View 1 (tube, helix red, strand yellow):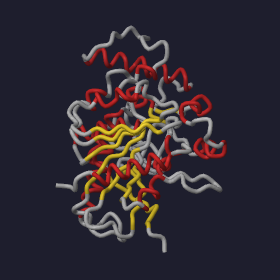
View 2: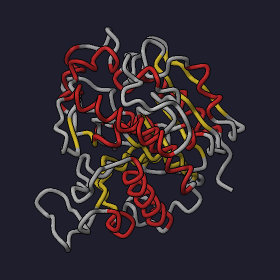
View 3: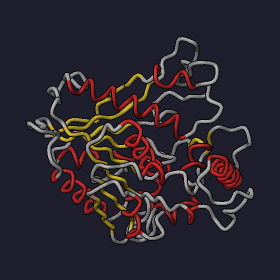
Length: 350
């Protein structure tokens, strides 16, 4: 018998938290839109059959153009690309969550712009509902109540930004692991980062102007119309950033085949200088930073811990030779095992 469970489908209702923010009320998944539609976020659950007396739950949020499949990749003819199954085999409960508008989750098409705040509110509500159900044993019939579990947020890229925002606003986690992440996003904006005439500053107007400039660049590079709420990345253009040269072509092809739509406003915000740092500065729980050592979004990985001044425990792990999408890197298991050791070393939930 397999020692682990999963993937098990989980549906989490976030209507009450998100619907009031949508223009015209509620929006549902494709085929079920309407005034009575519920807003649902979908997830996959993986777990050891015996999670032990003090389990740790990893809530995993994927980055832009990805959904929960980033954490459980299906590469035909190859094994060993499932972060979720690997960590479940090491004793962790893993919940890979789809943001609103990705994977099987409801698409908030009633919003004038799907921004990071909207995605954060959905994730906060979904995580809270998952915790309530897990603590009374109602998340999965095969698992006992997880009342004493420590919950750890794990995010990659845009998902790491959202993990940071979720923790800064609602504090659902005892620790966070942020992968493929940077607070210093200036290098992501291209040579025309000053487009739009916005001087760098902390006031709301300057920040809003920089977001609009980032959005214009994203629309121009992706071909998204001015009124489109979402777009798709050109994976041919991102391959050098996403994958190191040693990643096999069939693995890259399987990854590209699973690409999903990307909310334009949220993607613009996550690549806007000054947007993310204010949330990172509020994090006061242990932080694990995982960054690709070949090419990744951080221009200077060893400067990243300084973005978390309130955290008294910050661990940096640079995965040698890896590019941005670590879960497809040849050395991915080194990162997974290092993250597992870090998570296992955290004190039990108080």
